[in-house]
Length: 301
Length: 178
Image 1 (cartoon, each protein chain N blue to C red):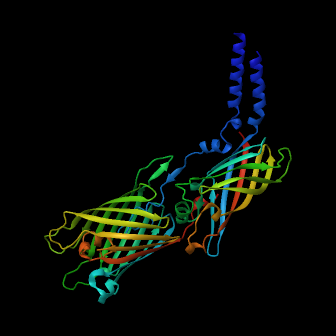
Image 2 (image 1 turned 135 degrees about the horizontal axis):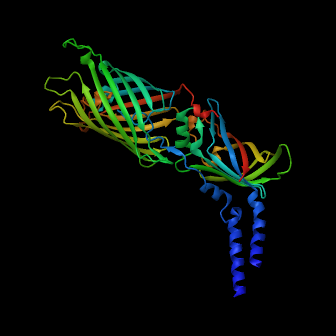
Image 3 (image 1 turned 90 degrees about the vertical axis):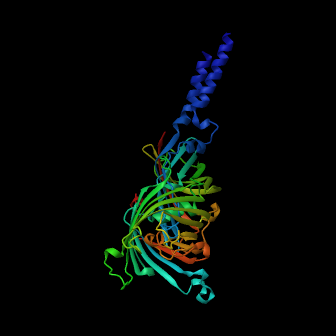
């Protein structure tokens, strides 16, 4: 009995000694270290490559001090035939500048050749999807824009108020996997001037969009806006768009096919004249170039 | 009684090694890429390391997300396109410091050899650095190159003039007794 007890004591002491020294444990030094790494605040990056999905905006905002210069084109309708070189003879252009005052707030202006529209917008990132130490399932961005249509209409007594229209959107997105991101865009558009006094000035629409990442630098995008109870027989269509993104360093090239000609929310949500399914499709592209005007302060030690 | 003595004996045998374990109090890394069109630098403090002064074993874990760039878009591309940090969130090093003297004052040149894992690709690596023990704190400093190709980090042709094929990594550790 005495002997047995002693043996047990020795075994226990051996076991204790073994575990007392972590360096003698079977796990390597690295394995132990890996288990001690503190989780960081991991913001989900690159839900979309660009600040535009196709026609409309994505939840993405650029980092503080970033200036984006955007050049966008929408050519004529592909079904206009070979004589018009499938629409390429005709082009609408939007030139835009947008500056990120903070990581969350971006303000931009643009000029569209279509209807000679000047537009301005503010975009605020309310929520950033996050994993790691803190979990936030979605990203949320508030988008608000105003457009001034300066097209000359001598047949109408045009006042400045009549030329204005507004669009407000709540952009909700989630990067489900590295390859798949989806975005939902409840939208409200108000146009001060509508074709007849029977028409409503307000329009609600719900947009749905997504991205399928093909490689690290390319993706396939789609975007659709459903107009909720639009004016009857107004001759307008829901906007549909398919796109392909190529990102190279500071540039994002977006090539797309869409039934919209306008490149502002106040235009393409309520007043898209093309029927996508009839082939009223415009080829178009957005090119953005980023310039970092202010350096990130976190970088300095 | 014998068992108790054994226990004490074993405890005392193992204690010195426990006492030789050092942990990073300061861990700073940076890399520098020098290419014709652009110089890129990023700093990282999200790293931890341990060093065993009895055996010379050293291990290091770096969180890729911790690299801070001057341009936020560049930081995004670094994580998204090059390091693929979602899939490979950490870089690690495990190796041995050779021929160091804990008793010697002043800076010593030491060689470290081990395995570096970046972007999920493990490569054996030999690094020479400086080692110093001052007031019980172990200081380690090293500058060494890493070839992106060695770790399957691809650079598209269009960016060749902006990103160097070999980046220079600078590390500075201050390790205190655990």
